[in-house]
Image 1 (cartoon, protein in one colour):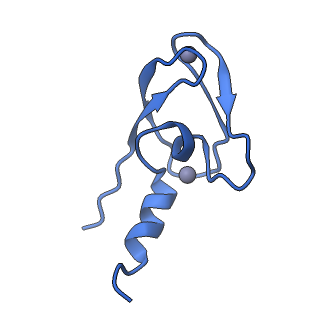
Image 2: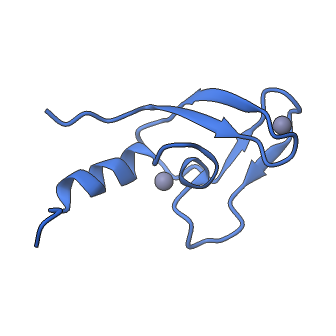
Amino acid sequence: MIKINKEAIMSCPICGSKYKKIMPQIGKHINSECVFCHTVFGINNMSDCCVYCVYSDVSCPKSQKKQLITPSTI
Ligand SMILES: [Zn+2]
Ligand SMILES: [Zn+2]
C-alpha cells in the first residue's frame, strides 16, 4: 500500500505561526495564505517544487509519490 501524507504543517515565514493544511493532490501550488496573519507567501525560486515542499514539514503528495517510486537501493 502506498501511503501518501496529505496533511502538512505549514510554517508561516512572516509571523512564524504553524497551521495545518490539507494538500491538494493535483496542480502546482506556489503560494499559500497564512491563517493567522493572512499574508500570502510563496516560493521564491522556480526550481522549488511547491509551497508545501518549502514551507511545510512534509513533501507534497507529488514528491512523496516520486520518492516511493524511486528505488532506494540501486
Ligand atoms: Zn503568518
Ligand atoms: Zn512539492
